[in-house]
Picture 1: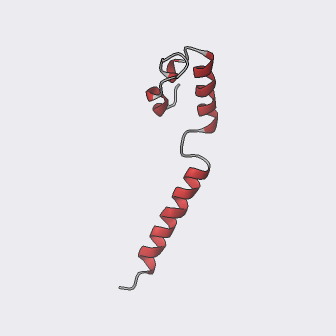
Picture 2: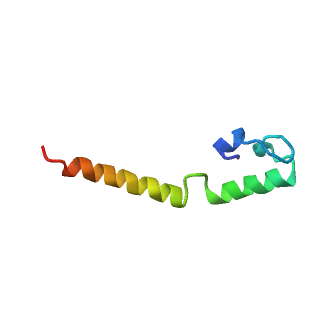
Length: 64
């Protein structure tokens, strides 16, 4: 099973789709994406959650 958004990535080494795993670079990158869980893990997701929490706090704390 491939990562959904990986189907759109093109390898700079072999010019094929990363999801096809044609060369060693493709296979390595695809394996790394599967292990990491996608683009929204780590600092990006943390920043998005903090930003969403801040927005909710502003809406709740706003006087009527």
